[in-house]
Length: 157
Image 1 (tube, rainbow, N blue to C red):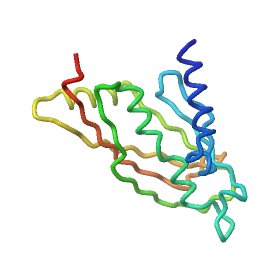
Image 2: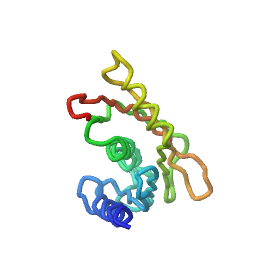
Image 3: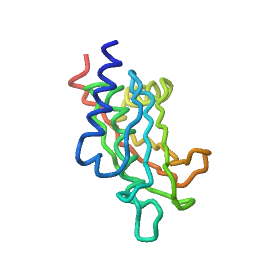
Image 4: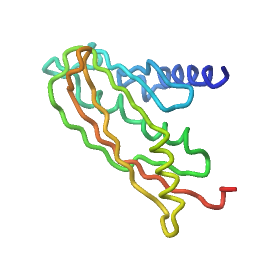
């Protein structure tokens, strides 16, 4: 129950945090284990561009922090995680509310830990893609993030 309450508080915190709030995006769900996050990006006067479609900056910014946050929450304090680069591909103009679903599997987390535990591996880059889709599932934009992960072996037991 405590993890569920903490996830709801994080969701509220994201939605109230000025830097995220100004993207126009809203976090609708954070799983208690931080392995799934869902967001929505409403098509409003705040997220529209000059030609009346969803502003690309809002599309990117609404999806920006989540892969990094999922890794930070799941890997623990002995790992350092940073966003390294991003790429957005626009597929179709957004004229309605868009949604994104971020997932992080146990297998992915185990693969990161295993790769960083190998002798001679100080850091790795992981690539994640998330799609912004409408209610029917049509992809409007694909965002590819590269996340840098390293470990501080001195913090590990």
